[in-house]
Image 1 (cartoon, rainbow, N blue to C red):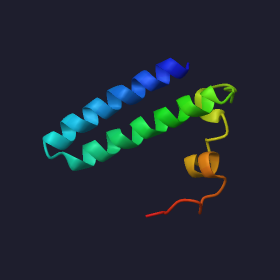
Image 2 (cartoon, one colour):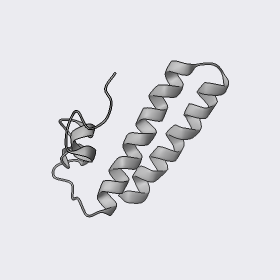
Image 3 (cartoon, rainbow, N blue to C red):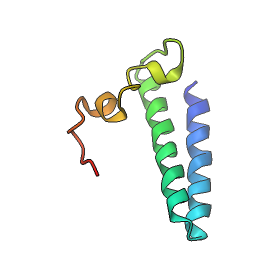
Image 4 (cartoon, helix red, strand yellow):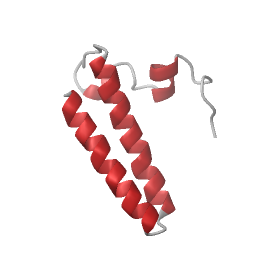
Amino acid sequence: MIQEFLQKAEENLRIARVAFDQAAYNASVNRSYYASFQAAIAALAAEGLKKKGGIRTIGCRRSLRVCLFGSENSIPQH
């Protein structure tokens, strides 16, 4: 599972770079977000968090900020 999500993260990062090089900045940001999200899932899984009925229910369903930082206010919001 960890390797699968790392591969997804790497693929999305490659696509983000291509989009950026083509001045498709919104698409680049979108793919960068998913690359970060998938890498975070891999990191959480590496720390021993188990999936329950699907990877998105490992405590991150409500918010990635809460899952990673413990609070919605722990990192800047836009």
